[in-house]
Length: 85
Image 1 (cartoon, rainbow, N blue to C red):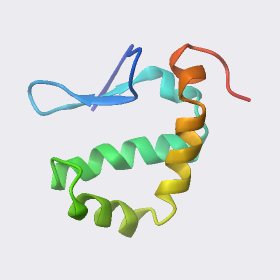
Image 2 (image 1 turned 120 degrees about the vertical axis):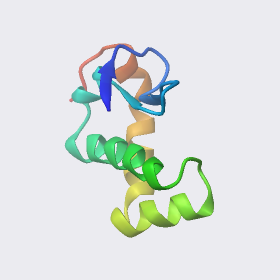
Image 3 (image 1 turned 135 degrees about the vertical axis):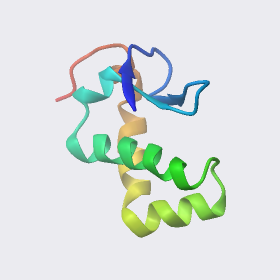
């Protein structure tokens, strides 16, 4: 997993199976950063967004849906490089 400047997303897979995380996520609250990292780590076991993937997410972070909603609510400000307070 490594960081890049990404303008439209928080994470994506590179063409060699590695995970890329946008450095701007560092401005998000800790629980949102944990969610992004967990999301990518779950892709090691499940390479898509299947029911099995989401069961794994829920097993590790039961509140992931509310954390994702919080992150989605601040996405444009984070990706535009604005500070989150």
